[in-house]
Amino acid sequence: MSRFVGLLIASFVMLLLWSPNSFAVSLGAYVDGAVGSGDAEWDRDNNSFDIDSRTFAVGFVLDTATTNERVFNYRLNLGYVRHYFEDNNDNTIKTNGMYAENIFGFAMVRKENFRWWAGPLLRVGYLSGDGPNGNDFKFAEFGVGAVTGLNFKVGNAILSPSLGFRYCGYGGEGSRGGGDEDIQQSTRNVFANFALLF
Image 1: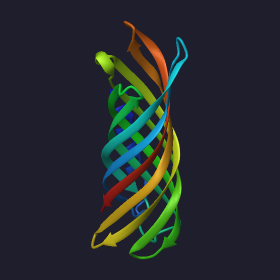
Image 2: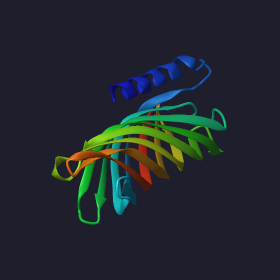
Image 3: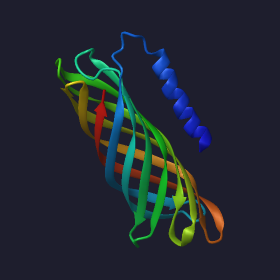
């Protein structure tokens, strides 16, 4: 996991150094929450079951165009997430981890103090935690989705609420029956995000 975190930080620093001075790059922080559902499957016996999914995340955000600078904007969310997977028997896998979410936005409306944007997103992450009876779980995450948001300029700050959906897949392993076993999960989540940028 420390290797993944290091890669995220290095990517973030490289983006800052790569961005030319003409880029009106804004930096800030965000909170993010999501709910949804999905399914999971143990590999050994193909035992599949439905799950509910809920997340809460906080992190740092970078955006290359928050108001009327250009049609395209790139937004990077680097976050810490708590993710809960719960089955129909109220058994819950409680995980936490880090992720990077790349958002490719296109302006629908551009004004000096306001921007409405929408576009696709691409997400990668790593989660670990425990389930019933203290069983350990580890997951690599890959997700795609779409998001739309509004940017309001208030003084020197940008208030940016957004809504969207994510389809995520999780591949990893968990302990069951006294040994480790591969497990795969997928979720469909609706999320809300609120960012404050400067």
